[in-house]
Length: 260
Image (tube, rainbow, N blue to C red):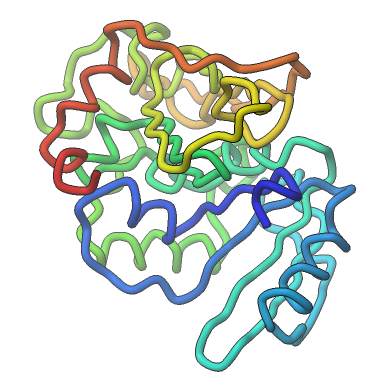
């Protein structure tokens, strides 16, 4: 399905693949581009044997890229096919509430946007658009509690974590004020599935580079808040970076060796 629809798996299932954590995901979230909505549904029902239970034009707080959610079941198994408003399914991922769930499983492999924090079971809150009352919805607060119960430490600032009181603001991969992209070499990519001979060297699910910045308090000024953003740029191909930065160092982390 992922290869055909240019979709990605995110949420708890991708986090489980990215770390050495041990928990059972409640369901699987599959994000697909707007044009692949019906194709994804057809594959899930006709080829995989799932039954459609409900479809809704569901909105998530601060996530403007989600258009519709289809819930399907097959016995005890449950999947959510989440259709995005545009053709870049990954754009919605970087509007999530926390960095710990900014991981995606594509048809080719696994991408983790904040590998050093995620492998340390840490997450930084993301508030893409500042709310008038600076609060989260009940659904988002429940998500925070779910991941805390699984052993994840969640803070509003990366400097709140022990050992991370200092970093290069606007430059360090884990800094919320750093403008990031899926091709900046600061994420961790692990190829899991062999590419076909006619496929290009890329880790994106489609022909887009996603650029983003987290929203929330400034690291260097606790009284200043910034709006985050997410942008999609169409590209011919996205090449996996091999620069010796955070993405390279993360491949030597014990969790990665055990998982892969």
